[in-house]
Image 1: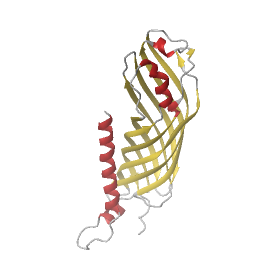
Image 2 (image 1 turned 45 degrees about the horizontal axis):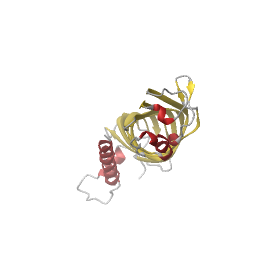
Image 3 (image 1 turned 180 degrees about the vertical axis):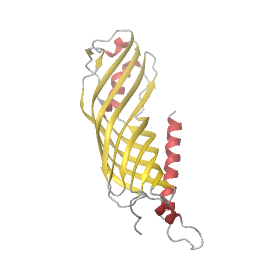
Image 4 (image 1 turned 30 degrees about the vertical axis):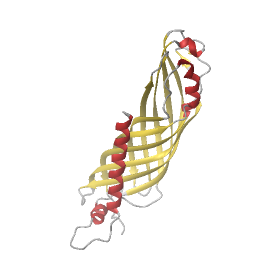
Length: 256
């Protein structure tokens, strides 16, 4: 599954890079239609869209893997891919605002204990444009929201020496808190027909950044607090790619 996700990300990056490169070619023969002129005609002033995609998060699971090592369990990898979605609005040259979220799941096996880590978040994101193009928008972004994750364990849980867990069987340990995000985002917009005030919109987005949970609850199993588990995955670096569709409007011509 991770190989499929990485291949998916690479394909989108190549397609996105090719589109941006094509949009930047201005020195073309006069008798051949210029992709840049067509892209300028297809630029937008504002739009609404819904998008979905994949992200790769880079965690540091060293402390968690060390804590669970007594169970002869295969370590969690530091890379987790997730699915994400957004509902957003954009005013090109000004900024972008979205409501979105994501969810993930990864699991490992062991001689004595099997483990699964899953989570989700819901977040509001916003950013101000640092360029004036109606086709490609670059913006630093910030986000705030709610995140929760669950560590599911099954097997000889007595080996972990954690309070309020059965010695044998299964347990779901949960933690939740406030999530913050900071990143840098690039959006590529396409709109057609080229010569109408309102148009069909496509959006391709690439974001790199950091996510963290500065305020988090205690680990719990049911209504009981479980001490002794580290908070390795309360922060991560990420690369996120998404594709969206929506509607757009044009209020002025793209400046040459």
